[in-house]
Length: 275
Image (cartoon, rainbow, N blue to C red; front, side, top):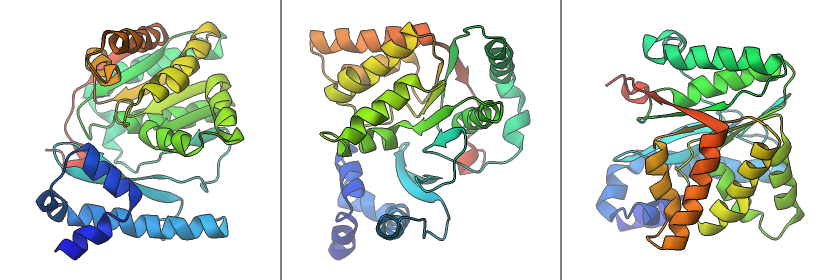
């Protein structure tokens, strides 16, 4: 058993995930299938990097870890996925019910309203969709991203935890500045799972803050999904109880409020069979 755990922890992302959520060896073994899938997919991804193309059997996908009372995994799009106007770090397959469910009618109505105003060269606020795990927040936003891109708008749809890992790995390189400039200036920016990242003062103050400030000044739309409402997200960004930290976290939340209108999505958990 020790050898199984040891092999899994050789994977950097698994190790960071285990440390972040303070998982015991028993927790890891109980979720062995989740971590094993992650390791297997990452092994394929390492081959993709060497060859410059996707070699994963689940083509254009990679596996990321999530925590919702227990470890889970999901497939997201990889950098080799063909892109047109839509630049995405995430894609998820879901059932058609997610288009029609009455629980999301108000959110869909607001997205339609945004689209009409935006195409008329108005400057409507984006939408911040928050709610429980697996309720289809990401699916709704990704579907809307595709619609906007088909109308000729350049959209970046970023799975935020994955994006922050890319940013960390790019520190000190020209790639980082290029990436941040794109996030600042793209027509429409969508951040999926805001608050799901391992927050640091650097990411909050030197990356997210300047991006949001620039987009606020230039009237460029931002959308986001999160498991947290904005009050809960404030605690996440505060990081510590230090007064300076709370002040800086408050500035981020104020920018989010200026850029987006929050809507709560209450629905069943589609990822766990609708329970």
